[in-house]
Image 1 (cartoon, one colour):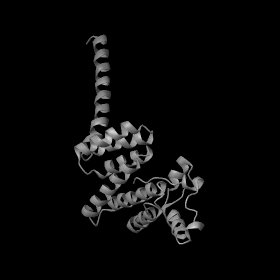
Image 2: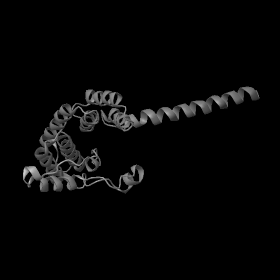
Image 3: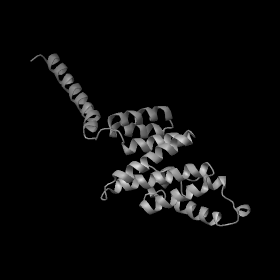
Length: 203
């Protein structure tokens, strides 16, 4: 066989093998996911990068594929919170909470975590709006639903994001409860430097 032809053949085979491997990585990952999961994952990445319009587009596409996809609903709510569209955030979280309460299976710990996170995030929104009684109600519901999910960042999160001092749902609930028991003129319900340490939740 002509050595040049052989070299070309080997080169083409290597290219085809690499191309097939790349296609498998891209599409194989999608094939193993439930409807809406891949778009939700893309939305989460855009959300992390603060590309909110792109994130919302992906979450909407996920919901087109799988109506009531809980990860996409939560993602939309987080976009609304980050862009200070608080009424829309509350509406989205209310819907997600109602849907999960009506459809959650008893042996679904991930779903329970999402429900707790939805309550916690709704509490944060109410907190930002100065609706402290409703914020406390949501924080208590989050803790009653799944305390571990909303207990604060783990060791890995602290290392990656340097958030050793994050205000947890429990911390904020205790503080609000104490303050709301005081006479109105003695209450101190907002401390910006502490409130800013609250983090949103997405299991």
